[in-house]
Amino acid sequence: GTQRGPQVPGGFLRALPPQALFDVDERLRSWASPVFRDWPDGLVEQLASADIDVPLRHALLFLSAGHYNGHLREVAVRTLADHPGYLTLATALIRCSDWVGQVREVAETATSQLLVHTDGRDVVALWPLVLRLRARERVSETWFTAQVEGWMMESSSRAWSRELLKSR
Image 1: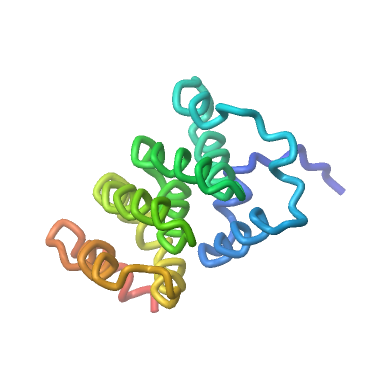
Image 2: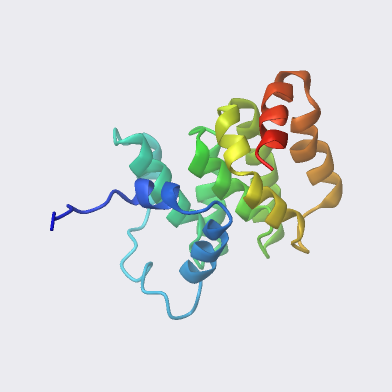
């Protein structure tokens, strides 16, 4: 058979069904996860300034935002809006149900900004994650209705809303 080289983390995460990103996030934060054992201090700041491949940056931000330390999750989420894309929007949406209030607030702001700057195809592709998010108890219903559902109602999003309806 053919041998495959190492897979880029961003490619792996992008290939998952969007709602499965919640499951990956939960495993990252589980007590048994070894992911953050050797996590470097200041990684998020380095990611923000480093000249690295965009999919890799987005994947590392996703991982950083899943850190078990709420302060580090907040630092990672604060940078998401500066890097619009499928995975950063997914990350912000997931953090909108974080158990730490400050992280949720920062995630709501990042999500609102990312909805404006992320390609509509990516927003539509993430809609299964949006539906799963809607069912989570820590998500602000008022914010969700105004910002996430509101995105669909905006005239600039109508073409994407039609795409979403066709995909059912």
